[in-house]
Amino acid sequence: MTVVKMKKHRINYIDRMKGMAIFIVVLAHVFLFSFDMEDSLCFRFCASFEMPLFMFVSGFVAYIHSDVYGKEEINRKLSLRIISYLCPAFAITWSLALYKYVVLAIHDLDIVGTLIEGLWYLKALAIFICIQFILVRCRKLTQELAVIILAECLFLIGWKMCPFIYKLFCLEHCFFFFPFFIMGYYFRMYKLEKVLTSRNWLFSISIIGFVCLLNVNFEYHALRFISERFVRPIFAILAITYIFANREGRDSKLDQWFSHIGKKTLDIYIYHGIFIVGTFSIFDLKFICDNEVIMSNPLSLLILATLITFFLMYISIAIGALVRKSNLLRKIVYGK
Image (cartoon, rainbow, N blue to C red):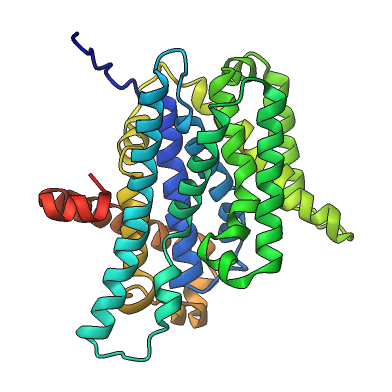
């Protein structure tokens, strides 16, 4: 029997959303690590929705049509995804630790910490895909919801009860971002982007709600927590999805650039931090905070941060292309 392999279909506006999301992530990291300006307006704006948006898109692309693929094919795809997330998460972290130990002769490394550390986003995605193994076996929506609620409870319990488990599985991040992964997952399953794009009033509410909540600080901790961690990011995600989904048939230069970057998000994510955090940091620009000329003009600071962001993104893409040329390095870093 001949097996026909289906060509992978890419959704243009999702690639573009991924490109926008990784740009904002790197820009936020530049403000945080290079400038040490987590109180700046730009960083607070980026941080208000960057990772929830990234997780939403990740959940969207993680969904697998059960009516197209058989059970064995779905299991194979999910298994490969877990490997492709865990390999770079640990390969990059351990390689940097080995470099510090052997080349830089830094022998006071936290061995246990190094072993359990990794790029948290990829580790969290691997955990979410493990939960997806269970979700695809549920026959009813109520069963799926029960699994989702149980997972959130376990994330919370592990986060609060056991420090080692909390660090090993990034449970704080899992707790906060799993709802957005699931949001994207069900958006794809039920084609909710079509519902969203046909309701302009929902877009209007999302824009107004996001802007209002971005500038409101609730007195009560519970309200502030719900607003900042869940409601405000949801407004941002809905507004951004509406804009990009309605541009699906358009192809401007900016659309093309977002699409190009969106197909390289893994490389950008795993390599850009090397140049602004830790051993290889070449953009430690905290002294800029003392420069009155630059600080008096936020626009000049934003331009500088954007230029650094472009450099980090393109050098990360170049490193990824170089690594993939080696069959051995490709298998070690990417698991394939």
